[in-house]
Image 1 (cartoon, rainbow over the protein chains, first blue to last red):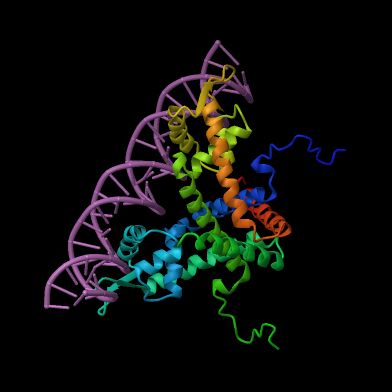
Image 2: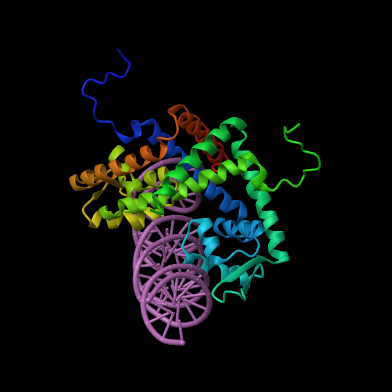
Length: 159
Length: 159
DNA sequence: TGCTTTTTGTTCATCGTTGTACAATGATGT
DNA sequence: ACATCATTGTACAACGATGAACAAAAAGCA
């Protein structure tokens, strides 16, 4: 009786779909996490986009701007705007490749490496704190779902 | 034996933490979804931020700018910039409240309602397509995890 | 070799978002 | 009633992100 009573209910508002509601939650969580991280990184004078760059240079020394942009899912022009800032602050270095004079190879300076480690500490702590409510196996389920989404969206991106 | 073998592994780079990797996947998926949605909404001449506004007006007619900003987790100034655009395009209406002359009550015009329905159709289709790989129960797990994160981050936000 | 195409990075104009300062209105307390 | 404080929306400057147009270098091909 009070099951759902679908009678002529073809209305189907988007927010009645379970997948839609799930995704809205994901988007909200992402937005909030970003804002919180921005606040917690403020005293290091960097923002999430900068941290994304630094972490990738930490992992992949000597990467090019092109590769970096691809990993971050942003345009090359974005890197052209942000990287000179980090370079002026002495956090990174840009050296031209001798084999291919088009590319600039990026690497962290010692100061940059130190700052990156501090920032990663903050980010990791924030993530751990926010996810402690979820058992590891749930996190794995989340990760798998997200990987699938990424694969789906990337597939038709480069078609 | 091949359980984890933690030996002297205190290195613990962030990307070795399962929760960290999970969250990175969430952030990436979110970014990709946003970009894809932007492309698919292009022919309607609106972007995700506009759609967020329209959907909320669709659900909550007569909402104020303040309430809208709070729901969207953005600043009031943001609404002050975007809403006049939508008003000029004849998609929404802003009427002053008579009881409280400070607030502006927002509502969709018929044209706005039509456009919103088209856009929601697109968004719903995109979400369904991206999540068809994940069983509903996984989506529920994801939603629960995200709700917990949202609650955690909101709690210390308004302290 | 010489021509075309691709790749890499920069520049620029445009737009969304933020935070701050501000004006107008309402609510509170004496 | 009056002063004080809070709330709502706006104006403005600063910044990140985007896409298009551009120059330089490399790769592919005749």
